[in-house]
Amino acid sequence: MRAAPRKLSPQKLAEIEAQSAAFAARANLGGGAETALASAGEDLMNADVVCVDEDWVLVPAELPRDVAEADVVKTLVEPRVRYDFAVTVTRLQLDVEKKIVVTKDGERRVFSGSVHEHGPKGFAVTWQALATLAVMVGQFAMPLNRLGTMLSTATKKFTSTSLARMAHYVAERLLPIYLVLMEQLADSDIMSGDDTSSRVLEVSTHYARAREGRQASDERPPWRDYGTPSEANETYLDYCRRKAALLAARAEGDREAKKTAVQEPPLKVLIGRELAFESSRKSGDGPKQSLNTTVVTGRTDADDPSSLVVFYRSHLGSLGNLLEMLLARRRPDRRKLIIQADLSTTNLVTDPALTSRFDIELVGCAAHARRPFAQYEDQDPKYAPMVLALFGMLAIHEEALDRHGRNRENTLAVRGVDSRPMWERLKAACTVLAQRWTKATPLGVAARYIIKHYDRLTAYLRDPRLPATNNLRERLLRTEKLIEKSSMFRQSIEGRAVLDILRTILQTAVAAGAGPHEYLVDVLKAAPEDIEAHPEHYTPAAWAKRRRQARDETLAANPAA
Image (spheres, helix red, strand yellow):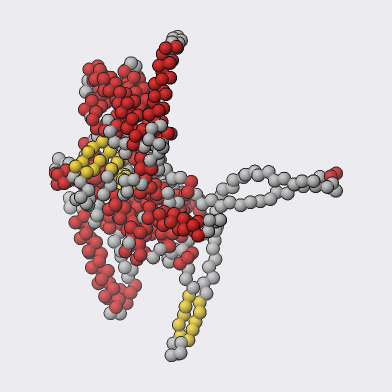
């Protein structure tokens, strides 16, 4: 039988009440929340992705026959709400007017109405449909064949191939914004990241053929033309040369050239010019073979949470490889950098050229340190629950700061007075655990991890800008597991590049407070040449800022609005 809970003495209750009051006083220091210290919570799409319409319907009160002639003394209206949702496909008939004119010189010319407002050239869908497709595929991991089946009607069939072509078009249009977000992210004061394994049939098939000896000795990997920036750049130049030759042949009247479509470089090549797809092992023993999707976040403005960039990249490498690629683009004057991640060796920046150029502080993740104790709690019923209880108290401290509103004063006070003693008790418990469990046991490894990385795990106590955990990045990769469960894999590396672009833009839009659907429609309607010339003007943060300014100007001009 479980022992009855011990009754606390009046003195102990008074002590607890005094401690709680002191903690509440520390949490209330500083006079309210500071915007710059707001905790990030943009883990999944918010309600702004749904197109919401509102309607009002008056439901009249029908009088029964026996009182039909009675005098109505008063009429009241009681508001009630019903929500309606449906998947609808609207067929929009466009009657494009054409005018044939004869100029003064006798030349006959034809002018047609523009359908740009209703959708892109070459696609029988609207801008709104493309934005909805991007959200369904990019954020909610909807398989294309399932989506095509759901949307198809008796008169119009949407295939997975046609939907993939549309998603690719959207990604092509957004590529300049994706790349400029990468540039902006590189200069962040704090970068946080994580990665998880991915499945792409094109990659796994290549390695399976190699293992089974079904490859020719000179067969190259499918990504050999864009594995490194130099390879991708040479491939890009080859596309440019072929395009120039084809256009020149067309200009000379070559009929075959006029029938041949111009081939543009694929996204995997264009991204590969900036970010290597294949990274080398640090041991020098050839290239890496593990395909991972990595996410890195960072604010372009340290004081503005809405400036958060969420950047995805799928590659044969790890978080450490992507961080090194980003740091290679970092401005030299941005010398100080904090990187928060789990402390795996694959996440470290080790390039001497970068470690000498920048002062990098590596910060750990409390949730990563806690996880093994939760997984193997039953192996040590005394100390593992003690460790978990201490981590629970640390989480309560952070939740209280969020509830009261974080600022520099209350964050440092709570972490310094309340959280630090918890960490000291954690370290003491792990010291005992390290003596009870060997390096070959999960609990022994977990205890030694905390002791070894104690300073990095507690670095957040000294810096109010830092969260205690890296949980946001882990949640941002949750869609990968949805993909594995719903569609198992992506067919090609090119398709994976499409997904990286869509998710980067959509998730960054959520962080910026830009309604993803409205933002996508607006950007897709913009002239491609304008976006390519100034992609920084079309980032989610820049777009949301313009919207806020326009709204404020409207309100200032017409306060009644």
